[in-house]
Structures are given as C-alpha cells and as structure tokens.
Length: 325
Length: 199
Image 1 (cartoon, rainbow over the protein chains, first blue to last red):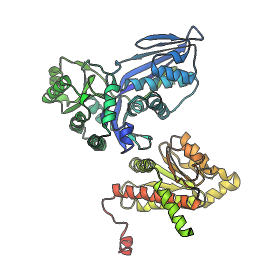
Image 2 (image 1 turned 135 degrees about the horizontal axis):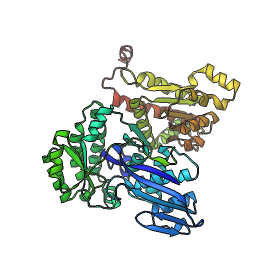
Image 3 (image 1 turned 30 degrees about the vertical axis):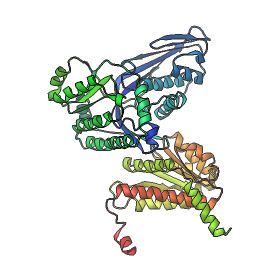
C-alpha cells in the first residue's frame, strides 16, 4: 500500500497571471500558501490481476485504463501502464471549491504512481508533469499555480516565465510573524460549488482583451508589493492588498462573483475584515478574510450563516505518508 | 554579394528571428538570481568561452555596480589552471562539470554556450545542472543541438554560421544586462572615471 498526501493551496494575489494567455505576454506571479487540508491518494494491489478499480466520488472497475471515465486517472494509468491496481482518493475539502483540488489530485496521483514504479521524482518534476497532464494533454483551461502550490508546499511566490518555465521563490517569514499571519486569516464556506473550468474558460477568452490584460498586469505587480510588506513585518498589508486584488479581480470576468458573495464580502468589511477574496476562479466556494485578532469574534458573528472553516499553513507539499519516507 | 553586406544581412536576419519569449524568460531568471542571491554560472569553448567571460565581467561590475544585492556570476572557463588540470588528468569533456561540482547549489542558474549545441563538455555540465535542481539556459546556434533539450530557457540563433551565432549570443547577454540595469539602477553612474571618460 502506498499513500500520498498532497495539500490544497490558497492564493493571495496574482491569480490568473499563471495562464499562458497572460504569461506568454508578460511574466506572471502568484503569492500563495499550501494549507493543512489534504488530498490523500492510496494505491494497492487489486485482487483481480488484470483489472483496475478506482474510487473517487464514483467507483469504476475496468479491464483497461483507456476505459476509465475519470480523465486524469485514465491518462495517468495509461501512461504508467499499471494493471491489477486499486486506487482511491479521500479529500478534506470537496472538489470545485477553489483550493486547487483537481491539481492536488493530479500531483498526489503522480507521486503515488511514481512510487509504485520505484521512482522518487522531485517536487518540481511532479508539478511540471501535473501541468503537462492537465493543461496540455487534457486541455483544461487552467493555470499552473495549483500544481506548483500543491507539489512544493509552503508560502511561496511562483513566477511564470514567458516560455513556460515556473520559478519557486519561498517567502521566509520569522515564525512569530507567520503564526500571526496564519491566525489573522479566516475562512468561511459559502456552500455553492462550481466547476472551475467554466469560469476559467471565460477568463481565458477574455484575457486577450487589452484592458483585462492590463488589469491582470497590475494584479501581478501586487505580488511583489505584498511580499515586500510581509518581509518587512507589515502583515496587515495582507488585508489592504487582498482588498485591492478583489476589486481588480471583479473586473476580470462576469461570473467571478455573485450577489451572495458580494453581500457577504461587504458585511465582512463592515465587521472588522480589512480585505478578502473568494478562493479560486469564483462563483462560490470559500471566502477568505484577513481580520486582526480583536475583531475576529465580531466577524464570525456577522457571518454566522456561513460555516467557519479552520485551517493553518503547511510547509511540506506533496509527501508519501505510507510507507513513510 | 559583397561579403561584408552579406554578413551584416545574415546577422540582422538572425537577430530578427530570436524568440522574445525565451529572452524575456532569461531576463526573469537573472532577476530571480539577483533577488534570491543565487549564483549564475556560464561557460563555453573558444568564442563562446569568450562570450561567457565577457558576460560574467559585465554582471560582476556593470550590472552590479552600486547595488547592495549584486549578481554572483562566475565564468567557469576563466580559471585556466583548473581547466587544464581537469583536461590533462581526465578528459576535456569534464572541464565544466568538475568545477560545477565545487560550487553548484540547488536553484542556481547555469548557462551553457555552444554554437553547435553539441559540445560534449557543455552537454555534461548542463545535464549535471538539471539533475541538481539548477535552472538552465542553453545558448546555441545551427540546429540547436543536444543542449537545446537540456534547458529551461533556450536562446537559439537560427543560422548555420558560427560567427553570427557568437554575435547574437553576446547581443542577448547585453539585452539582459540592459533590462537588469533598467530595473535595478536608480542612478546611472558606472563609476566616476567611466562617467568622465564617456563625456
């Protein structure tokens, strides 16, 4: 039995600049952190040596990997040419909620399958391979930040170079500051799931328009502004810049926000939050707010119709938890 | 056609064909190396070696002058004794990989320059760099050769003329230098003696 554990990520600023339509024109950048909410992928010898069984929200049993419905499982099990194997996934957070779950799945599955064949790829290789599978092979209209966020782990700036290369720059804060930043971030579940690709498809199409490109360029510039504030110990800049980013992101695609989300956001800002965002491509999922400690109970009360979701930063990225490495 | 005109026309045409995405990516890698204080290694044989040496000189002084955070760029073919010792005692193909083993850290940037793209010592060093989590840049000409497949960024002068390839490579280094200077230098002085000299 092999079990891989791969974290979800929350991105703070720069989202959207990780898509080829943008970074091929101008270098992209995203500031994000992985969190202690995970995708677990386990694999084990299947009782039937010439069959494959996979378990996710559905269960499939097939004779050939090519017959699998789940696209990522189909592509990867074909590539690794494995038979007589059973694979199941368990996640702390449902799919479609804006924390990069499908890429966490791909990275975790790649990690697991490499281990099945006796290889130990680097985290960078896992991220690159996951991008290759999701974006190039399956044609998903998504960016590259999810794969890197899930694979590398920690608080990072990812830079997306015009030729497709991705750089990882860890943002190292002293432990007390990081702890404070962590505890000043609150998350609420809005309960409204959506498939990332429908909104992203629009974003991809629209990003070719000049004004959207310029807006994304400004959002990307916020990454270094925020990173420098954090390095200088000014962690409250997180709230201010999240708010700036929110305003800019709203102008990107019609579906990125909805009245319910907008109302919750406004309410949060009236009750102590200084900035926030809807995680992922928008439409529903998790709302993230920056709120200094003294105002947090007030904020929780104001948003009591939403479910509070506890989380913390994590540093490891994708890892094999069984057999332990 | 006139040989002079022919050369200059070929050079212009080759410059026009450069892939700007790759140059922009090389610029970003240099920016990253300076911000993160990563080392940048460069090397090549013959004229490419001279280009490596010239570029390292430019970033040690020109692009770094007056900055607190400087470029840490090292040309591996500048130390003649170590190169000769390695070549004399082992093999020419080892001259760059051996000194990379002394210095290379994960995340460093490694630039291999080979007009043909097939110089054995450049190939070996880039392979080593890739296997050790370095960021790699290949500068090549002709058909790109083997080093084009070993790099994150490929600067390919698409021409079958070694002299033109060398000129193009140097021009690209100067473009990168110009970008770095525009980004990092608020004041333009290159030193009082230099400033007086170009008045």
